Image 1 (cartoon, rainbow, N blue to C red):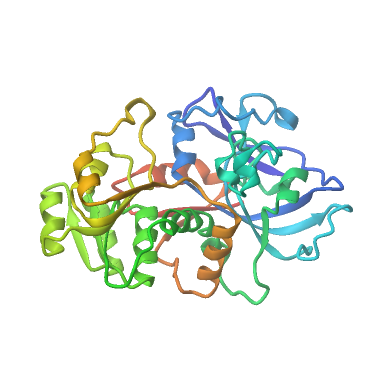
Image 2 (cartoon, rainbow, N blue to C red):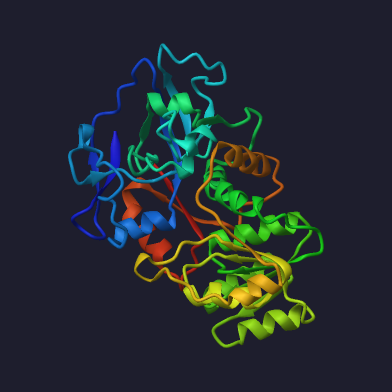
Length: 365
């Protein structure tokens, strides 16, 4: 099979190589990859700004140390089912979504015991620990099969593989909003108009919220305005805090979502919160500069709740799949570019151009 290998000792280098198709063992499921979307994390690994040598065992088996197959926003078709896999939901020829996080599932692991595999200290995600979706085939191995990472797509679904690849990022958005209890008529301020910020805004609109979307990039803001949200703020040349207060009649925003990795955004968004507001730190912050300066009295006197959010689990994947299959959230404007596997370097460049016209970029092996 063809696969795109990330070489960790060479920034911005992904080579297309021909390797043996994975052998499906008795407890495994072999999946033919239909689509795999690019994620910002993939981009950071490609640029060399995210160290993949720490926390994840190199994919040595079969490929050699220092070479990874990444990609975790995967849609595929079941090619082969191991003889010991008895799940009747798995059928050869059926389309499936693959959940990313795989926990250690040890009895002493609180995260796994509670089903929070994304928070397992020994989490072994697909596309990091296990080979990912930037290849023609992916082997879902024993531990992943037993955890239940394979989710069948309804047979009658007409949604394209390109749009189904949005299940994974949307599942993360759902996980983030599960904490926020967004109500009809509330103001929801999202900072960051990339794909994730747009998905947050779309999901909030399904709950009847009034969405304020803020963005620094003029190009991204222009694209975001095509979605028709309630209000937009160009943070490049506007007093963000004052703008939010003006739009909310001086009451502040009921919900704030940080969808970009900028410290000042989180600090300023707290200032705009209404009483009993809920603030989500959805995006992570740079490891070398992750300490924030937050006004504790705002949190105290306004009774503001602050939440973190990281990745997702099967329940959120299932909810995301249902929304996309039912076309309650349309992905036609989110997915902007599709590339072949051979053009993955070009696809990475398109995704990483923050002033360009790309939102979600999808690879079709």
